[in-house]
Image 1 (tube, rainbow, N blue to C red):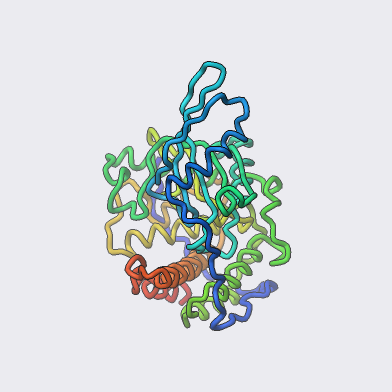
Image 2 (cartoon, one colour):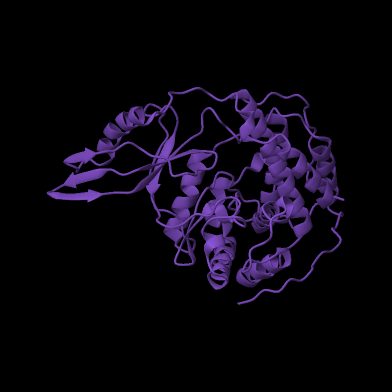
Length: 380
């Protein structure tokens, strides 16, 4: 299946400005300081988890738990792999589970929303149309680890690096397999966008707005004030531009949030799981598609890296999504700008946290400047 490049750039309508955005940005507002909990070295974590697992598995005669280990990725939450060996009724089995812990000393988002992530994936797994890991347990009581956490099944497969055009299994695959992988990713994303939002109303934040997109707009406007990072002139200008060009259709729908290839697990050239739901919302499909397009630009043209043969460019990605979703994508220029604005805020917040932790080298000082420049281009 081939999706040719085609332009669909059009004038954005600025007629409907009923959403109260942008809100006034409070300059100098201090970001919420992250709570300090126990330092989770592997042995301390193992000792804390073992009795908790016995409570969850009362039929087990014995449980052995090796030291938890890091998978090499995990977004803004602490993610670890645990492999308990369970003996029950004379049968021994070894499990592969993922432990997801609410962030404590490196909080990127205002609300980590760990329970929200758990509930979304639980609902998706029960529904069956979108592949996600099976959810096992959510623990709200901070007694065990100092913060909430959940456990889910481990999905075996390959995960792309963030810079998917310059390395990793996608870059190593032949072009035909690469195209199959890429289109499977877009088809999976479109499949979740076809779901009714009725089962996900627990994601609604009516205090922030009357529609899902209005709620997202309000959340990220508040985030800019909360983050503690200096507000850029480009961000304030983008807020004004977006308020003047709000999409006419803002009804919303289930949005993954951090919609990009690096948050999918692949096996045999197909997407086998969609992971990392920290920023899930009812903001609507186009918020995801805009985020996908922006990130794909950021790790290719935006980083002066050639796009891999077999992947689709902007127009081809929109065409593929429209094919799989069964409808047109609306106001994509606006949604790409919204994605750039959100990422600009996140990068500035990450830079601030890195400086506080004495590790400024982990977030390049010019990263935020490059994204801000792109934001200007998208809102020109």
